[in-house]
Length: 255
Image 1 (cartoon, rainbow, N blue to C red):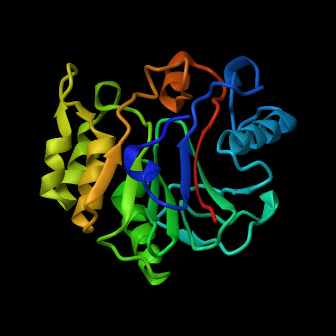
Image 2 (image 1 turned 180 degrees about the vertical axis):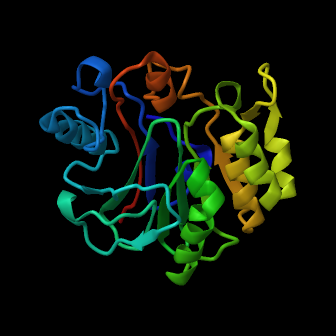
């Protein structure tokens, strides 16, 4: 489990970006696969989620996740919901103790937020589409509605696919730059003609700072190349594998 210094120092907050190590899933899901959306054994995923909460030192805490759809939708979590009642969204906010907000990723970036003074937390699933279409700003805005101060919100961008592994086409690049000229700095030329390498984590940090966040940590690891520790949708696709595991990131308020 990886953590960041900024959120580690936040009073009354626990968080973690889990690796795939320490889980019970097998085969292509080997390790701590926490995604019920995969074709892994349901019992294995359930046990992996339980182990994750134990790693946080919060055994028995309700891990709450949403049905992620690469959207800007954000939900306030007041009480945990059943798995089959999970709303379609890509961001969550809460001010209630004992509820772990969980984000599932396999190359997309998990982003965890906290205003420790206001005791408001948030979590977002930020792939390129969600980051571009507003899930980050929507999560920050929802936290402010719960009493957070944007100048006090701390954010941590978790493990995701890094620029050296993320080749995109010209339409992808122009879609970002046409909306935000400043996004051009997050693209460098690929070895393939008219293609680019995209810095997803850098772009997310850029967007967060544009919203007024001053404390942003970025976990600099590549989910695509670090197979021992992370699942990767793009790696599985390039290998022609039928499915892939999902890594978990979580944050919660403690007493």
